[in-house]
Length: 103
Image (cartoon, rainbow, N blue to C red; front, side, top):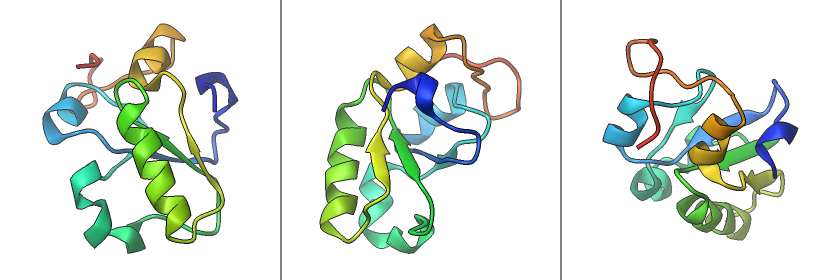
């Protein structure tokens, strides 16, 4: 899924590590580090579209495959990840809500 196709009501799931999240993330994103996913599956909605994002698209592609193998069907990988998000001019904020940067 290209960054430009993410609707405002899409559940944006950021699977990067804590330091990456703290440095910069999409304001509407929900943070769930990839390694915590198996124990936190209940945190991922099944009743709406979920767009999974990481730095460049590799980890998020793995998470999408994992979710699909566990019953999710409305889940998509964000092509190019947060790098593409920032390049497209979409907002990036740090943990304090100030302008952030992508690690």
